[in-house]
Length: 512
Image 1 (cartoon, rainbow, N blue to C red):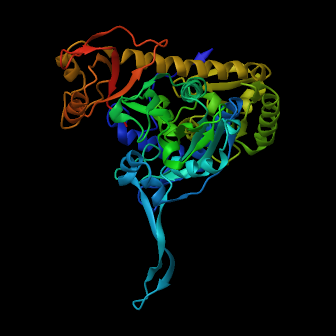
Image 2 (image 1 turned 180 degrees about the horizontal axis):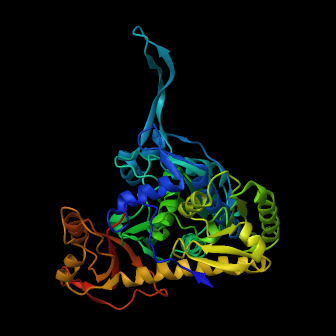
Image 3 (image 1 turned 60 degrees about the horizontal axis):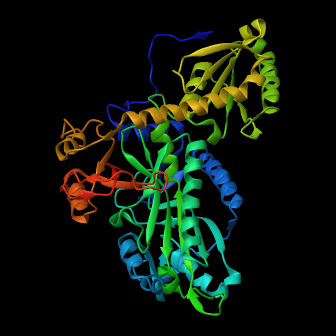
């Protein structure tokens, strides 16, 4: 039966409710996920953090390939002239671009290394790849028989960040970007929605995070796109994080890049293109959605280690027997499967006290911890702890039963994390029908040190960009998405800010 001591001890200081931004940094530090680098705005992703990203890659890559996409790689450097061909695109990214203007270093008269050779044309370090990939596709596409092109690349990008935050906003980050070309507008729009659905499924089923899906307003749209679709997640300070985007680019980039093809009736037409992406920002989303005041909590389907076995060896004479029992248990668990893959087990053999090791694995968020010591060898039981339960909660289970129960235990944790996140989101999502209530919802009681407040507001909006800008200036609140609900726009109403007609409610929130 469960044994839960009453004493409360937390590994992370400060707690979420006291200082959420600092709590987030401390969770990352305690779990050894990443750290700021000596290059301002950039991060070093440590092995435990990179393993999470690798698992995200592995699952997403399989989903992309299941929908017919293939991987390729395109240059990191993009000629400035490529950006200038698509005015809205270059304007949208201009302030974030890193630009290479010289090659070679030489030592000057003062003994300093200086750039020596100006380039014939400046090169932009990839902030996104629509333009360079479009130039390549223009060479590949001649006929409708060459379509569709369905390609994804895993890469790094650079967007000069003034206010960096590890995983959420860094100057260099990792991502995937899909780029496709289609014969018709209908096919391209279908692709845009299909990939949004892939993201929504991945985030819900693997990261255990519920999302709202919908369309961005015109002011929030990807530069140069005709339509941007997105998924929006709520994290534990009730702010939104854009968790993935899929863009219908129309023929804008095809015209800029010269992607033309001969149609079935012999005419020349520009291709219809899309792009879509998800980045290491999802690691930050995962932390903020699930971690607690003891550290990281990993959903089993994305965890690199499902079960950690912690041998308790207080006396040297019992050490060999305990380690042998741990090896035997690990081998038995590894023979079982969870989510169509072997269960990953790690044995912590370090010469440290069991309490120290236990707390380290709590902070790293491993779904299941198993303690086994001399007394357990005598009783035949092991102490099993779930990371989604209070840190010192234990259940004593016969060692012979645990391998058969491990998969079910992992699935229970996965489902519990999703349900918990869903309940949190629902409890902090409010239908609002007046301007006064809207402003009250998003205004902290303590303006000097704002407490956690707000959430998602579902409110009618007339479509006015001026109103959208006013709300952003007043409250730092933006339209996160115009929801997609069963293919309909939802019931019409009246804009709470202007009194003008509104087609449907939209989702407003403060965001990262």
